Amino acid sequence: MHNTIVAPSLLSANFAHLEKDIEMINNSQADWLHVDVMDGVFVPNISFGTPIMESLKKSCKKLIDVHLMIVQPERYITLFKDAGAHLLNVHYEASTHLHRTIQQIKAEGMKAAVTINPHTPVAVLEDIICDVDMVLLMSVNPGFGGQKFIENTYKKVTQLKSLIEKNNTETIIQVDGGVNLETGKKLVELGANALVAGNFVFSSPNPTDTIAQLKAL
Ligand code: DX5
Ligand code: ZN
Image 1 (cartoon, protein in one colour):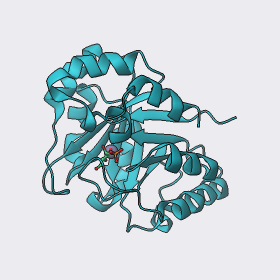
Image 2 (cartoon, helix red, strand yellow):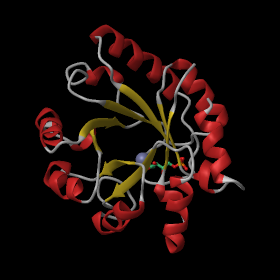
Image 3 (cartoon, helix red, strand yellow):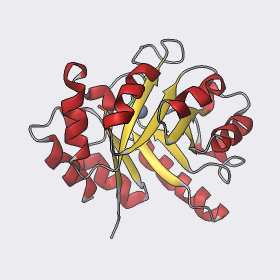
């Protein structure tokens, strides 16, 4: 029996009624709230930053999983900690000194994760896998919600799972982009432990129920 972590993505929420969506997530089976921060430089889109998180942190009862799609993420570790992040996720492609950045995130008392883009091979994680609590595999090119799942991700889940087993670590495998019941089921079967879902949850007629269905995968 799997116990899949479900992390609805705030990016697809209704920003004019954020409190309503947070309440829905609080009352759902969601484990985490996935928060996508984009700077318009690392990715071709700008989302939101810490002021939004400051207002969320009072009302959100779930663990806050922050996905930084920004250049030089090492400059903002304390800022995100103070804004309520429990888990801080930096991109491999944006981190020249990834090892140091991971240690700094942990020193702030947060869980540390690294994300890789669709074109980045799992093999580059070989010398960091023992230091991170989670690896996020992007299954779309980061920047936008509602994109089509890239099928090559399935292979990467299998490769990551064997890297984790080889190193005997407890690293969580998270997948983000184009997750629905169909892609999610296959991902979980292959070894994914955490699913991010934006569009699939928020555009469904009953988001609470959709979260429960993902949770049951
Ligand atoms: C994409 C973001 C995702 C996005 C997922 O850059 O990292 O978290 O919100 O959205 P869906 O589930 O709609 O693909
Ligand atoms: Zn994300």
